[in-house]
Image (cartoon, rainbow, N blue to C red; front, side, top):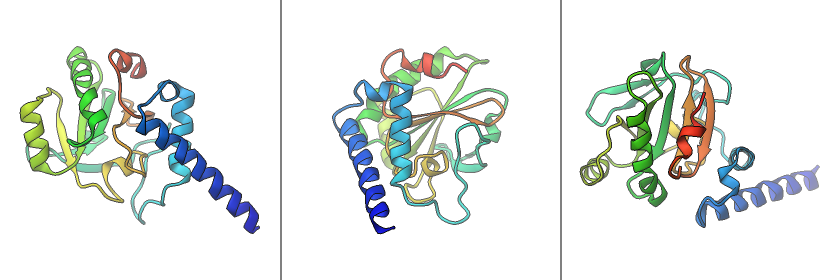
Length: 197
């Protein structure tokens, strides 16, 4: 029994190390594939602590559990309900995260291309409000922004990212189901194909 536990922990640690190496040196070709994303997600899930009691987490194909995040302007967004009727791409980021910053122009381009009928985009910064406001003054984007405090029950955890890897994106269907998840940044043109629903 004990040897099985040791082997399981070693395999999980190895997978997490592989994911960390890929994320640390850039996403590389593996994370640009669906198979690579599934491996990365499985590794993160295997090595992650359980969500706190009472914190529901999203699972691919299932309805996203309802939660609320404060909007940058002081209001709040109820997910997924406030965005029902159209697909929603949620991007979790932070002002100190270099890959997050690099992908923001691409997210902004995508959001602008969607018009009134396409996929909506929501950024959720796991960061300090003042840092986010200062960042967005320097690099403005046209899609709405929310804030959350990083921790064991933050928006990332609720959307299936228990380790807090950034950037992290999810695609939620018009009827509130989690369709896709993505670890790592988008490069130019990748969002369009990824977010097709």
